[in-house]
Each structure stands twice: as C-alpha cells, then as structure tokens.
Length: 162
Length: 162
DNA sequence: AATGTTATGTTATACAATAACAGTCACGGA
DNA sequence: TCCGTGACTGTTATTGTATAACATAACATT
Image 1 (spheres, rainbow over the protein chains, first blue to last red):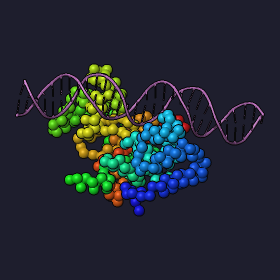
Image 2 (spheres, each protein chain N blue to C red):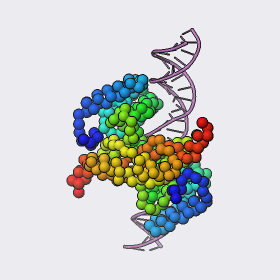
Image 3 (spheres, protein in one colour):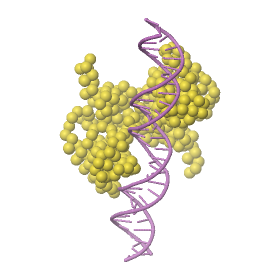
C-alpha cells in the first residue's frame, strides 16, 4: 500500500474522507473548523497537488468567502499549524496532508513535469543529518525534506517520446 | 573536523580561498566568472549566512554593478546552477557553497534564533525517502534537506537566560 | 560585414507574505 | 443586563520575492 501515490483514485471519497478526518480531529482537540478553513481544506484536497495561496484565494473570492490575501493565509496557517496541511517550500505552495492528525515529519516527492506532489515520510534527523547535527551541537526541531524528479506517469511519457 | 561549523574563523581566508576555488573550477569547465558573478560570490562568502536576493542587490547597486532584480537573480542562478552556491528554500535566500565544485547533495542546519546557516551533507535518497520513491516508481533528481533548530551558541544563551 | 552566442541593462509585472487596524460574534462574569 | 474578553473575519496598505519580455553590448566565427 503506497501513500496515495501517483495513480488515479476515487476523488469524492478523498475529499469527503479528508474533511471528515480533520473535522473529527478538530472536534477532539477543541479546534474550530470554520467555513473558510473547511473550504480551503476542500480546495486543497480536491487537487492532488500543491497550490499557491493566491490560487486558493481566487477560488475563495469567486465564492464570496473572502477576497484578501490574509484570509487565505490565515486559513492556511491554521491548517499547517495543526498538521492538516503542509507547505511545500520548494514551490511556495500548500498541500493537504494525507495523514491528518497523526504526528509526522512529512517529506515530498515533487514531479517537475506535471507538478504532482505526493507525501511520503522521512526521518532525516535519524540518519546522516542527525549525526552531523549532533556533532555540531545543533538541536533539530523541524525538518524540510523535498525531492524533485519524475513521477512514474511522466517517466513513461518521456520514454514514449524518445 | 566539522564542516565550517558555527564557530568563528579567519574570514579573509575564507573569501579568498572560496573565490579562488570557484575561479579554478570555472577555468576548468569553461565557465565565465564575470565581475557581477564574482562579486555576488564574494558577498555571499563574506557572511556565513543566507542572504536574500534583494539584500545582495542593494550591495551591487551601491557599487554600481547593477540595480535591477534580474541582475542579482541571474548571477545567483549561475552560481546555484554550477554548484557554487545554494538556495535555502526555507528562507528564500542564498548561501555560498562550502565545497564548491564537488558533486554533492547539500543539507542545511538553520538556527531559528540567530539565522546562522551551516551546510552539511545528506543522502536522503538512500534512506527512507529513497525506498518510498522507489516503491512509487518516482525518480529522484534533486533533493532539498533543511533542518531548523537551535545552534550551539544560541542553545547556551537560552540556557543562561533560564 | 553578417551571424550567433553569451552576458548585461531595464521596464514592468506577477506572485508571496505580513503589518496593522476595524468589525463581528459568542461566552462568561460582574 | 452590561461589559469584557477572546477568537475569527474583513480590509487597506505595504513589503518582499521572482520572472517575463525586450533592448543592448561585447565578442567570436564565418
């Protein structure tokens, strides 16, 4: 079982399940999943890719849910802060988390061709990097791990072209 | 021997050696280390921290070496492309490479307190992440590995405060 | 001289992020 | 009931990051 992966799948499920999981988590933790926050989460879930804040804002604006940048950023901050979404630094963009609620160190596989982003997991602090940090006396609190390359679908396409 | 590390050291050496190494590498590879490119490298070497493109641009402008963003970005692109500098995605900023020329996968330790950045090295593609990618059929071409936390100096300060 | 290549200069604009302040609404306590 | 208080939303304005597009310069090759 791969983590979502690059294949097609039932999307409505995806969104509904994702929102439900987050809603439950909010309930349990006393967090408010307000309309804007819920909608931003849905927008993120509705695409399996990272979206820029302004792209999200465009949708919100079209729906009358808010039209200025802070509206989108605040909702995104909430989602990121509580682990319901992540920021992909390489792209300055955001993506819904595939394991909402669970405590984890996300890692991403980013296709440079089609822009698809898949969340994996990594514990870099436990390998090379952890050793280097320990040696330097550096205390790691958070890590960003992002890999760029070609997803299986685009690899096949490239092979076909050649 | 740690890789530069968070301690003080002889800076003039640092800059001169860094430029010389890059110049040699350019020579060997038929690349042009033009005045702007060389100056940007010097600026980066002169601070052991990540600098924003506009901060660099300010210096260039003061020296009459170019005043518009593309000037700085092009020089930075050149340096990054050939491995003489790196972009720290987390900070949207750039830093001179500590092992110019050598083929490597950089990783960074970023102090959230003082902003110091130290380059380490990591092979995330060989651990968890590599396995996950392989399973998904994803071909990793480049990786971003950045850890944020507290450097030894700031840790001591904190301890002193408490 | 004509051409191609590489680098630089400049304008304008797009995209990303946040500071600062005003308004709303629900809730608990005086 | 009235009054805070806190959490969220709305809006204006601004700062910071990055690039598209086009013009020019310098130089090597033919």
